[in-house]
Image (cartoon, rainbow, N blue to C red; front, side, top):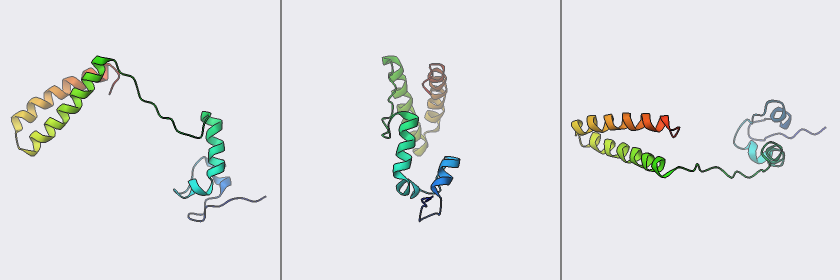
Length: 105
C-alpha cells in the first residue's frame, strides 16, 4: 500500500492517522485531502466558522471598561505616573473579579 509522505519533514500519512499529529506546517498541504476528510467526520465541516460570544449590555460595557483601563495603565506606566498606576491597578483588580464572577474572563 502507498503511504504518503511530507517531503519537508518526512512524516508519513500513517503517522498522522496513528497519532493525530502532523510533523510541520507543510504537512497540512501534503495531507490536505485526508485532513479535510478527518475534519468533516469530527466537526461536520472542513471549514472553520468560529464563534463570537454574545454578551449582555452590562457584560459588554464591563469588558470595554477593562480594556480601556489596561490601556490607561500602560500609558501611565510609560509616563511614570505611578500614583495613577496604583489607582488604575486597584480598579482593574475589582473589575477583573467581577468579570471572572460573570464568566467573562
